[in-house]
Every structure is written in structure tokens, then in C-alpha cells.
Length: 132
Image 1: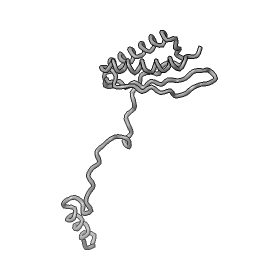
Image 2: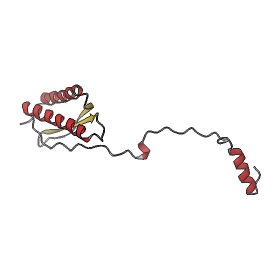
Image 3: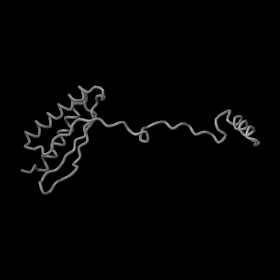
Image 4: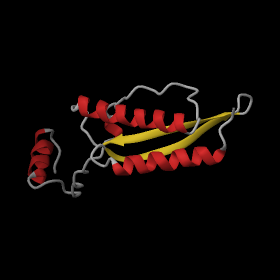
């Protein structure tokens, strides 16, 4: 049987409340309906919970994930909502490419360059036979 949309809305609200109550484990959660298969009558709900634990604290992160999954399972069973697809494994984001990292841009050099550059440039031009 298809799950009424009101039950899906309640599930979303319940997950948000769970994450808010477990602030020692979770920073926040985004829940997105990513697709709908009309022929089968189901909808995909993606749950992106942001764990507060460092990636190096694997047991704490997996413990938090385990409790969230148990909450989802218990809630969905009591609401008669079925899992169609299995939950994806807990993963960490790969390191960002250099082009996407946040960094402080070094100050722009003045047209004359850093102090001492003028003397260096004139030395180079003299050695090449040009006047500087």
C-alpha cells in the first residue's frame, strides 16, 4: 500500500526533532524528496544528517548513525511506512580539490613589487646589457 503524504510529512518532522534532540551527535539534517516513481507508487526521501563527531572518531560516528537508523526503523514500522531501498553506508566526503578549498588570498604585489625588487631588476638588466 502507498504511504499517505501526511505520514511522509510526519516522518520528516520526526527526523528533524530527533536530530535536534540529539545535539551531542548531530549538527543538523537535510531531508529531500529526490525522486518519485509513478509506476511503482513510491517516493525517495534522502536524509543527509551531519554528524558532529570527527571522522577519526569512527565508533562515535557509527554509534550515532546506528541510533538514527534504529529510530527510523522503529518510527517507520509504527507508522506502517516501508523501506523500498536500503540505506546507504555511512561515508565521509573526500578531501576537497585544491580549487575548492577555502584559503586566504595573498596580498597583491604593488606594481613596483616587494621592497628590494627594483634593485634586483636593475641588476638583471645591467647584466643583460640593457639599462634599467
